[in-house]
Length: 111
Length: 113
Image (cartoon, rainbow over all chains, first blue to last red; front, side):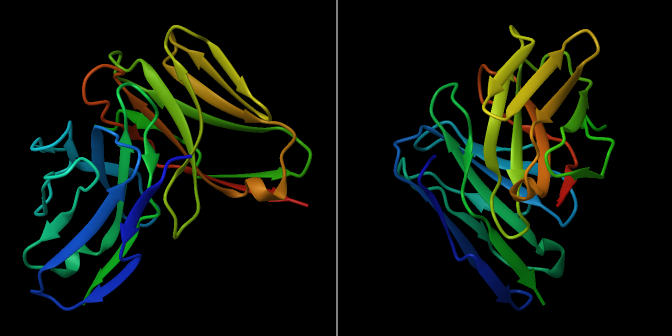
């Protein structure tokens, strides 16, 4: 079981607002990931990081951006939220070739 | 182009019986496969994994079988318990490099008392 935290758990926000979803892990994992899941659908990778100062886009195009200034922290930012961004956002981490462990997720609703 | 497919959106099984969840993949570069269990408002919980050098892996009530020639894997849960009711996701990746997980659509398992 991995210690990986996401805040907020739920967020309701108006169109055009800037938001940052937080993800932190305390295991010193080098790789971190952001996945997006719409209800009843599969998870899609939107961003990942090999380590500090490394960020890559995932397989699903996303208007969000990420940063990795510290090993334990991998925040995701939406500069201007839109209703199409309504989804569940899931953060994961791993070390080397080990299993990915997920945080509890953030449910985002953009009105 | 869906690289990982779970063709059964739902499955209902009686308590105590065996639950079998299936998953097919198309990308022959995948060499690491995982099953996760998920509740609606939570993150996926890791259950069991298998690498392509094996064809079976067991952990308690959970067994995963891999048929590389058919590009098919299955998760067996026996005996099934009411607490097993959840959505189960199959995921695949290449174990080297970024290990980007590709997920199936999920199967909702309901265990009936």
